[in-house]
Image 1 (cartoon, one colour):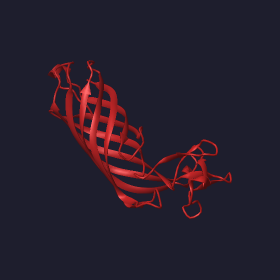
Image 2 (cartoon, rainbow, N blue to C red):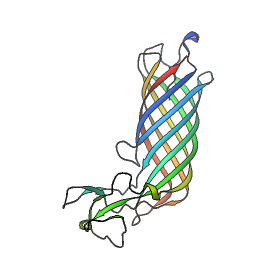
Image 3 (cartoon, rainbow, N blue to C red):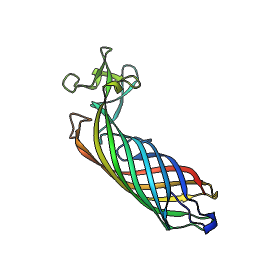
Image 4 (cartoon, rainbow, N blue to C red):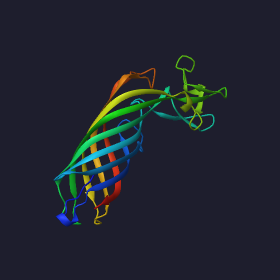
Length: 221
């Protein structure tokens, strides 16, 4: 993500970045990111990234059971967890002076995606944990809550795909060996087949989103 521009004796050659991210296909905290960067040539850094992000259907709404107060997502049959690998370039387009000011970087990255499709379990009014079935459960009163933590992971299916993103980073801070900032960007991600998240709504194999990431990290000189 951010790489600051210093005098030659102050230039660093590596950076390790961590962050939390949200996007238009997820909840408030969409997932986590990690990124490693190394100097490639003047003002350009080579980057290697990893992301673990939840992908939601745009029609998802969370409801509260009138029977016990538990929450659940009505109509959801599967969860989609995206594990992304990314290789890219980060270019400084506005460098901050020494340890002051704001630095702006432009970056682009692409790579493979492993889509993990996890059955979404619900607690029925009869006290059973089952995968949501739109034929059997036709009204909100038939569901009392969502499944147990990690329920369904053992039945997951892997759907491969690819991703590409472009973003702008705004780096702040006054410490040379630390970095903190925010990133705004857009992403496109495609899978080899359609992924059914909400069976009663249109589903798709291609997802696009805008995202926001808050990041921090360390530099090595």
